[in-house]
Amino acid sequence: MGVENFTAAPGAGTRRAKRARVLLAAKLQTPYGEIDARLRDLSQKGALVECSPTPPQGSEVVFSRGPITVPARVAWSGEGRVGLEFHYRIDENEMLVQLKRVSNLQARERFRRPGIKESASEKERALAAAWGVQVGINISDGDF
Image (cartoon, rainbow, N blue to C red; front, top):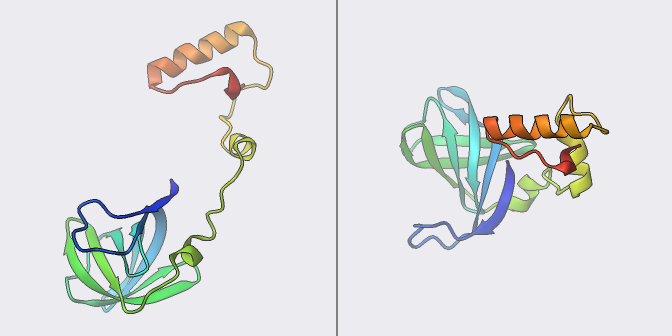
């Protein structure tokens, strides 16, 4: 997924820090061992992380994403998600710097569908478009 722009979290109440919605791999070091996690939401002050098992509320953890590690407290825990409160503010852009934007041409080359020829006939294009409708995707001339 990558990163969406930093926004005020909906329903955040008194939260003042802007948050970035993301979907990135991360790790939590807990007193019970290391847990693989998914970073879903990030701000200077904390993060929303999906993981299983979930550390209990109030426990101390170390959040890791790439080369960055941050000590944190589990502010809340429930249903496969935890809210982390970092012990100090972070530069969230530093953590997300690896996610540079690519041009449309680069993205098209990177995510080209395998098996679709560069020069497809009209019949092949029509067949691909019909198949796309059946499986719920839009195949346009830009895909060839």
